[in-house]
Structures are given as C-alpha cells and as structure tokens.
Length: 286
Image (tube, rainbow, N blue to C red; front, side):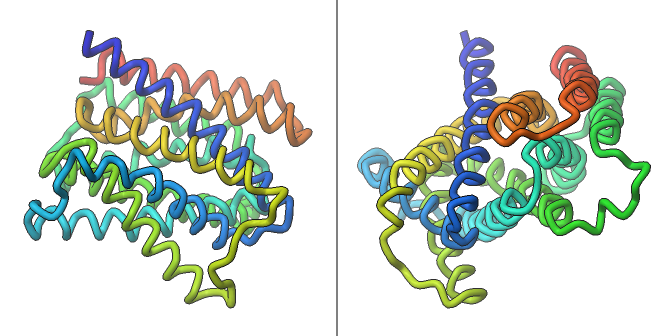
C-alpha cells in the first residue's frame, strides 16, 4: 500500500509541476512581473496552509528545525523566482529538460548532508538523464548557455536541489505537514523580501483577469510542494529528484501544444532517454 501511495504522490508531483510552470508562464505573458508572480504564489499558498496550523504546533520545534526551515525557505523563494524569470524568456520544452541536472546536484548535497549514496545503477541512471538532456539541449551550440532563460533555469535548479536537501532534513526533524507549513510561510516572507529588494513592486491585488490563473498556479504549486515532501519522506533525495524528471515529457508536449514550440520529435526522443534513466534508478537504484 505504501508503494502505491508513494507512486501516486510522484505522479501528482510530476503533473502539478508541469501545470504550475504553464500557469506561471501564462502570467508572464500577461505582463505580470516574475518577482510579483513568485510572491503571490507563495502568499496564496500560505493562506491555504493556515488550517493546517490546527494540526501541528509548529512553535514546539527546536532551533535546528527552524534553522533548516529558514534555509529551505530562502533557497525555495530564490529558486522559484529564477524559474519564473526563465519561463518569461524561454521555451517550456527546453527549460524542462535542463531540470534533469537537479538529480545530480541533489545527489551531491544529499551525500554530503544526509549520507545518501547511490549504487552503480543509480549512477548509471543519472548518466542516462544527463545524456538525454544533452540530446534535447543541442550542445553543438555552446553559446546557448549564455542565453538568459538558460542561465536563469540553471540557477533555479541549483537552488531547488539544495532546497530539496533542507526540506528532507526538516521532514526528518518534524513531519510532512510541518514541512509544508514552513515552506509556505517562509517562502512567502522571503519572496516578499526578494520582490522589495529588486523592484519597486509593492503589495497589491492581482489584475482581475489574472486572479483565476494565480489561484490555479498556487493550487498546482501547493500540490507539488506537499507531494514533494511526501515522497522525500519515503525516498532518498537523489532518487526522488531523478523520478521527478518524468515531468519533462509533459513539459515538451505542453510547450508544443500551448506555446507552439518546435522540434517535438527530437525533444521527445531525448525525454525517452531520460525516462530510461529514471526507470533504472526506480527499479535498481535503491
């Protein structure tokens, strides 16, 4: 039963991650500033987290919990800010595959902080993920790394992978629910600080035409956050991040269908290579 529930959580995380990216990209196309999109996303999520405070006395946790929670909140807010900046300028079907590097970064920090080391099959799976992402990424043109959307996406995945390790540590020190609450409220606080530091943007109500999109974004982001915490509770960070790469197929298809992005077959082929890597980790990597 636990395997089934964890599998469902992985699928929920994959789908909600892709849909969250779609809605955030749509908001930037409607001239919403990325830092404001980032803040409103966390703000709505923090409001949705308030009822959970009746089930968890979050003030009872010790200083170690708060230290890792604050670190996770900082890295999470920065990560999503860079993610929205990347979506504003780039293609969903290209930015998605870049996320495959997160598994490698998460594995490194997971080994350093959590003592989670892969076996030979885990390493082989990660190698396939990297190879597949190169296939999509078009490495024949090294100047592609200088594009702002690519740089922002790389920054996002680095901060996201580090955030994942902190989230796992918070779960170990508390619970899935406490992790979700701390991620929501601290993410809101730090995303507001980011917004105030780098723009003149102030707190305001979103444009009326965009409210529904913001609510859908926050809902998908909330599902993604909770599902991520649940999976991390039962799986090593490096392996979980590898499985999450399955979302790239959805990103490629949605990018083609919704935003008229090109090279569908080539990108799907690269995605299939990454899927094989993820399956290798799932079946043999533990």
